[in-house]
Length: 578
Image (cartoon, rainbow, N blue to C red; front, side, top):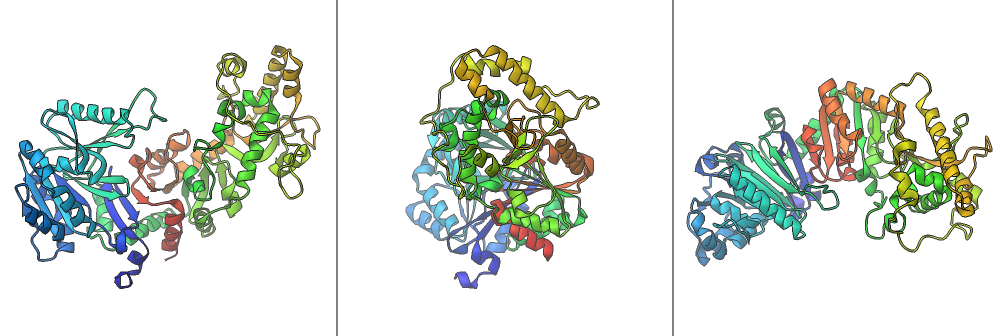
């Protein structure tokens, strides 16, 4: 069966959807290489009958065939017919019968039909049953069929009822369901759901779709929900890609490639942690990550470094020993190829791992510096040296790069926050290194950093009286050129200003770009998160996002190529060559 499929489908199946005025392309390894169709939900018959999306899918998958239509809870025989149907439509306008529909075995039959490549549409209140949960007649939360995973499907009645639905989502969030989403379908509106593993993508049909998404507890600051409207897709993008499912992945790649070529060498890409994760770079917050051993503020804040440079360097040694085994992946290499071909102007990255440089990219703007090198903190020197030279000067690594017995022992557990000490310093803004003046006439940003750092060291020296504290303050590797300045990791620490010239260059290139790519970043950190919209407003750029899931950046994108960077970027580079 697999050998009979077109080559693009033999390697991985593809599902597609539209969302937030952009085209979303979902790449998923479906069984037997079958590209599963969406699951359609409509508020009413009017929306169902008017849907071109449904009509096109039906004509493509079941040419000349009418779908099996159910208007009452099915018998066991009818449920079996649904399982074997090429297409099935379930219609119910009566909310009072939801319990009967749920107990009829319809959910399992629809799931089996869809898994076999069948086309499914549900019209009316019974659509609520397809979610993992639904609101019954008295608006209490009940278990649904979980065909649309981690979802609550709500047919819009009024603003008050939508608020009730949001409250239900917040309640589910509080019981540990941090990925739950609610979808509010307006009258005469619909939605196409594209399940992919535990993720679900939604395409608005006919009318705007409301979404309430729970925020993970680790990212929730006073709020547990993010509410947004998913608009009907951009007609121009839809027209470029066509209505048929087959070949749409290739059409999306070709469209993105054409946008990059039309930009005539002005294209910019912004990358984040997602592109490095595929090289094996671990996240510090994962179980067993470095933040379980080190306090983030002690080893990544400029005041923490000033107090105890060696502790920060010991953290950097551990990071270095992990990163030295990680190299550029296919995504980094694809970006290098695009730059070499004159298609890509520059890479703007939030990453500090140096993998873009290692891949051979020429213009790399490191917004947060690089934790592959140290830099002298004497204003008149500013010598940059590789990490290996720093660790060898301390005697912490041998000629093979292995950690020696001279390196301080790793902490056994993370020290809890306590009052006083560095935490008092961190809340004292009087000596912060981050209050950067906008006036650049008196000194360069490069020289102000060391000046402020040395002023901070002097202030701490006046406050610290115990010999051990003073010894820590004076320790740290010294620059071998000037013999005076302490070497600091060249990543931007908390409390330090971002590199001004790098930021200015990134803003300038983004403003003039005619195409802008977002790769592996969720859009949580400024100024990187502002660059795509800057490109759209200043340069009328086409924005392409590459991500395995929707992010906060997706609302700015014209096209979302859904997949990992190492999967998508190489085939996009090939599309550019074609």
